[in-house]
Structure formats: C-alpha cells, structure tokens
Length: 314
Ligand SMILES: Cc1cc2nc3c(=O)[nH]c(=O)nc-3n(C[C@H](O)[C@H](O)[C@H](O)COP(=O)(O)OP(=O)(O)OC[C@H]3O[C@@H](n4cnc5c(N)ncnc54)[C@H](O)[C@@H]3O)c2cc1C
Image (cartoon, rainbow, N blue to C red; front, side, top):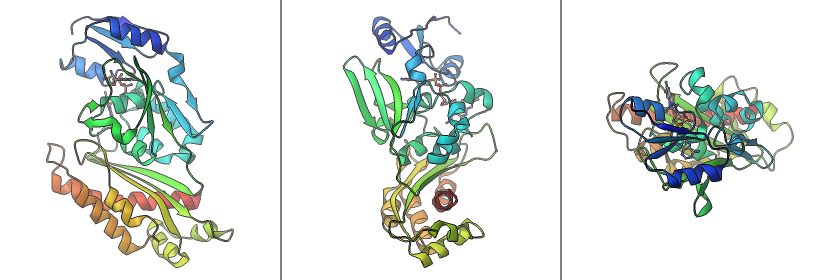
C-alpha cells in the first residue's frame, strides 16, 4: 500500500477547506469500505481526511424525529432503545452489519455514501423517508434519500461535499417498520435481497383496547384475518428493496396496492407479486435473478407482517 497523508480536522469547515486545497484527497469515517478498497488497490488517495474528530458529526438528536450525525456508528444505533422502539427497521439493519468490530467503527453515513447496492441501511432509510444533510462550498443542501443514490457506488455528492447528518421525521402513532436481510449465513454476509417495510395502522375511530385484542393472535400469520375482521386500514405504506436493481428502490406499485386498504391474505400475495414484478435483479455469483425475485415476493409479505406485529405489540 502506497503511503498517504492523514489529516484530522475538527470542524466541517476545516475538512471542506482541506479537501478543496488537496489533490487526490478522500474523506474517511470508519474506514471499513475505504481501507478495503485501498488494500485491493482499487483506490489510492494521496491524502485521507478523517471525519472522526469532528464532534458535531457524532450527535444523535431526538428532539424532532431523529437526526443521526454522520459520525454515528452502527453500534450506537443498535444500543439505543429509543431508536429501536420507533425506527425498528434501522436497528434491524445496523445490528446485522458485519461483525461487532465493524459496527463499532463503521458509520451509517459511510454505508450510504459508499452506495453499494447491498448497503443494509439504504432500504430502512428509504421507508423511513430520511433526508440527507450535505455541506459543501455552496452551503448546505438537503436531499431526499431516494434522490441520493445514482447507481452502484455513485451518489449525488459533488466533489468535496460532506454528509453531515441523516434526518428521519417523527412517525405517526401506530407506525411500525421492519427490515429483513436475506443471507446464506447468519453473520458477516451481505444480503442476497434486503426488504424494508413501514406501515401505519389507521386507528382513529377505534375504541380503546383495539390493540390488546390483536395481541391475542397466535402468530403473525394470524394477524391478516384478525385485521380484516376488525376492518383496520393501512396507510403511509412504504416498501423498499435492495440488491434487486442498480440502486435501492421503492416498490411503488406494491405500496399503492396496500395504501388505504385492510390487509388480507389475498392482498399480501398481491403486493408480494407486484414488488417482485417491479424488481430488476441480475444474476451474480451470490444469487440468481429468478431466486431474488422469488424471495422478494416472500419477504415483502413477511416485512409487512413484521411491521404490523410490532405496532400491535408496542
Ligand atoms: C468485514 C466487513 C463486513 C461488512 N459487512 C457489511 C454488511 O453486512 N452490510 C453492509 O451494508 N456493509 C457492510 N460492510 C461495509 C461497511 O462496513 C459499511 O458500508 C460501513 O457502514 C461504511 O462506513 P464507514 O464509516 O466505515 O465508511 P468509510 O469506509 O469511512 O467511507 C465509505 C465511503 O463514504 C465516504 N464517506 C464517509 N463518510 C462520509 C461523509 N460524512 N460525507 C461524505 N462522504 C463520506 C468515504 O469517502 C468513502 O467513499 C462491511 C465491511 C467489512 C470490512
């Protein structure tokens, strides 16, 4: 590995100025993607600008929704019970990234800036309507996560721009979310398919105690029948799919099919099939396209049910 200079600025402004003044510089956060690329000789920066000493980037702010500073590691998200209760899909994803050693240094922002089609946090952030705060020489801009990814390892970040935080809005009461990472092994594995869902159950005209009666469901599979009988409608439906297209994507036809409807067995089958038809997976050494499509159908149903189960049990 060729040597390179290492800088440790303490403010976002200093990091930006350094980046503008140096040729061939690269930002580094946890380094779990950058260092692998350098070792594989796919990247040879002349300078590395570390973002780890910038204190403002390490903030987790829960005063209005959730703001995740770009220095926040996956481990910090996993450990946070407040986040687990409200934004479960994100915790589902972060707790399965790499190993504890990786999660202790790797950041959520680094995961999306690297923009691998298999990035585990991308789908949860899509269903949670995250917005990305970006600082650059023209000032600050805020971009919806859906517009952030351009393709494999490509984002809308311009030269020198820094992601400062990821902002997730407050969710309505009776909202639940889930992310399912489908892998061959239980740990240290990238997903073959990743599916996230987020649902709100519209309980505006329900008598108190509606949730308690649903808690009697023997398992998640029994919930559709009980919800159908109770006539409880789903709204704010979000479904996102990873590793089935060049960039993480929403399954909009599937979302529209469930929006404003009472979930039923037939509808779960329908949205699974719709999401599979929207996906555009390709064959790779880790999995074939037909298998990924089949798994989308199975996992969309499962992620929706998990989200509903979490609302009922909250
Ligand atoms: C053993 C191992 C297992 C892994 N397992 C998984 C897994 O299961 N799932 C998964 O999704 N990923 C996995 N990864 C990939 C990696 O750990 C994640 O993508 C991680 O979140 C990257 O974060 P980081 O802070 O280490 O990023 P870095 O490597 O520091 O940076 C990644 C990229 O983002 C840029 N960058 C970082 N922060 C900013 C910022 N604030 N503003 C602008 N640009 C920025 C860097 O310049 C670089 O291009 C694994 C990696 C390893 C080594």
